[in-house]
Length: 451
Image 1 (cartoon, rainbow, N blue to C red):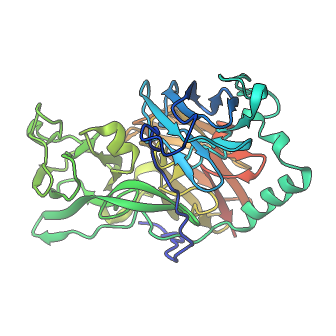
Image 2 (cartoon, rainbow, N blue to C red):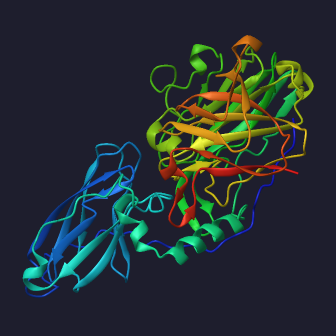
């Protein structure tokens, strides 16, 4: 099966974010002037808050009318200094109001609290001024896309702060966090039948040291555990639902009977909270990478982590016999975005785990994108060979070399790397707001370490 890589399990400090919706003040408790409220429209996109600078008067409550005009989930929050008031996570096109009580004159921070989005530039400023200087409304267009970075992120840091941020993020890699996804799930074996048990549950998941998100995981992890089978196996997957909402399981790319396809009210009834369902089928697909994931409220459930790897292995785990090239190291890499932030195997840099090989090793990487955005994955220092797509082995004449591979939502690739050059080689998404800002690297970054 190849080499298993470093997985961190140590605890880190928990950052508690106070998320609240403030009272509108209709009980008069704020005194005279509290009945007046300022309404301000806010738009959220990738990766900007617009307006980036908001002007509001002191002594009046503020009603923010927030709309998510982006494709990923976002929040809008105001850091008052005493607490952080934030909306719930909004999906594309959703709108909500955030009530903020009267504030003293001063400068306050606005931000998106979704993991990784603040670092990607979703920050802004709320200027609260007394008198005429605090005219109602909002001024200042979003700075998204200019040379200084989204919402003016660069100008808010000194050169020294940027240097320190970059150095510290690299020095911490690979940082320890609670929990690890992609761990092998051992089946119960009876004859040629392999039975796997998965439990869908809501979890608090640490994506990088001290950063916890509300997630959904199979068996408590993001991604869920890795399932490995062989062609000809009879497979049972028992899915128990311990969440507060229904769910189902879809085996993405796997050939199954129609009744096992996991689409609610088309092929099965949803698995209700407290219930279970058994998926049963024979493995008829060739060796390669496949995926299992939720197919109920999937924007939220898959976005929050209800996905995992389903690997059809060659006999005796001999991938060299499949691809005609030596394979010494095998790795599975899930790309994720949305409520969990920009993650690789459920973790953000510097808590991502490297792929480790010796000089001369053949490295096989199974890539899968269960996010909602396209991610072009780029490997420094190497060209790799694309040998399979969506579980289909490419004929030698169809294989191709690349150093950047566009992986769309739902796609899977197998790539082979010949580890000829020693060193630490960055491996990351090349949509730069997913990986690096003035404070250093974050998000979808890992490394190929050749020793």
